[in-house]
Amino acid sequence: NKKGFIFDLDGVIVDTAKYHYLAWRDLANELGFEFTIEQNEMFKGVSRKRCMEILLDIGGIKATQEQFDNWMVEKNEDYLKYIEKMDESEILPDVNRVLDFLKKHNMSIALGSASKNAQPILEKVGLLSYFDTIVDGNNVTKAKPDPEVFLLAAEQLGVKPNNCVVFEDAVAGIKAANSAAMISIGIGDKNVLSEATYNFNDFTEMNVDFLERLITN
Ligand code: G16
Ligand code: MG
Image (tube, rainbow, N blue to C red; front, side, top):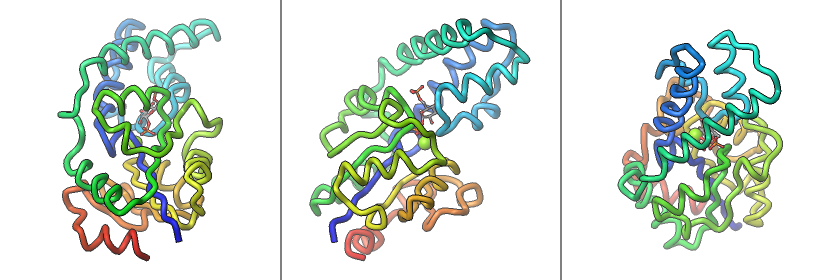
């Protein structure tokens, strides 16, 4: 039984949330209000469009369609400047070890992210070659918690959904994996990601025994 391993990007492979935060904060400040790091929690795993809607709600701003679209473009251009300087030092702890283990055992590996900037980020940090396929915000119409992103990744890997394992840091992502009938692995706070099949604070806690069970069961 062929197995597939699907990784979320932000919060699992790299911490791009800090750059998304800076770019959203820049925009909020320009529009005349504050945007805090606590409020940024709501933006994790959420599509760019939905983030824009939430931001305008926070600021109490009513935008025309044209303003809405322009501000989204502006936020993204600002974000691209922040991620410009990313390199392999930004890969989260033990991500390389887990990817190397899966590659060594000829497992199929996919990215399943809401971001439209996923591919350039993987290139910058030097991980692109690990991935057999990338499914991201450019390929899907329904955002997490809808399972579309992970189902498409499974299909592209040629692996049945119930033979797939998903690594996720967001509640919406865990819900998406569960409704795709995949094994969900929460990376982060166990209390927040309580719906996950398994929980780890980060990849350093995931030992070889666990990885071996994942690839054989
Ligand atoms: C990521 C981030 C979200 C971001 C989304 C869209 O999701 O967690 O904060 O809003 O991608 O990103 P972009 O504006 O680059 O298209 P994920 O699924 O990788 O955690
Ligand atoms: Mg994430």
